[in-house]
Length: 372
Image 1 (cartoon, rainbow, N blue to C red):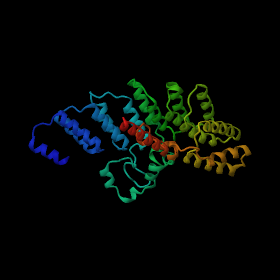
Image 2 (image 1 turned 90 degrees about the vertical axis):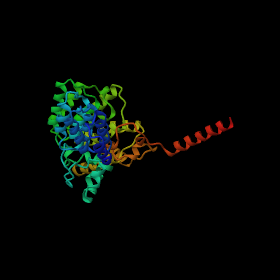
Image 3 (image 1 turned 180 degrees about the vertical axis):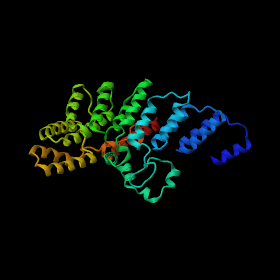
Image 4 (image 1 turned 45 degrees about the vertical axis):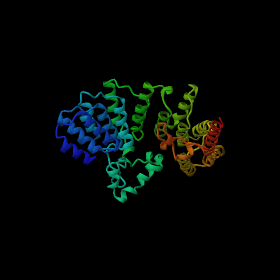
């Protein structure tokens, strides 16, 4: 690409047009090169060529996902100040996840990697020293996102409530409507905030969106927030959702099971644990490895305080020892946080017997077509 640009510079010394610069920005977006994308946008601005709104949106998508320290400044420079750009809900969700998932522009505390292991650019990876490639935080991000989200030492697991509330005020002032993705990022900013602020975030969500409008991932974030700050509310919320006819996803029930064992009161803990365990078994699902480890740690901590009752001990033993009856996609994941939200082929697990069945049917179709 650099050679092509040199040829263009030598053979076509005139002012570049919008088409060329737009396609060049698209190329650097496709190759995850934020620096070159910004440089082309600056060049376009100097040439007097209008930067397309889609190009500025792509810049923010990369900058927020890659945890660039200058992402807020880029947002003001290339989204807020340009007249052709209209701030919308995708901008808000990107910034919310910039704080609650990427780390708000802060480096990795374990090895000092400046993008907190979020920059997937191949040139950046080639320049990454070996000790940063072998960082335990990077290993957790690849295989155990549940453990990653529970570590308060990481920058994404800080109190980002002030930033989230500022973005909520901006959305209200500009009449930007929030969907499930924005609210999920909003709740993520309050996971490690003080309980009073976390309950304020819960109240805002309850006022703005009904339970029927939530998706499974937002409900899981909702229960996770309660697990950290008010686990006694998880059972009433589950029952309220059941009464409303809402389908209970296994992803939500993983969080509800951890919230149940988090309770300190033995009577409430047993009631919540029994109800959640019954719901989980009705789904034909099973306990994911991260949930199992959490329940085991909690059981050991409770036994040091006082012996567990026979019924509670029996349920927890069933939870820990449970294995799946049939192979499913859940068996491929350590926790519900390891799911990639989307419907792409890589997220669909097809058992081998299904593949054999499809091959058999394909052979039958071929034989029929040949005989005809």
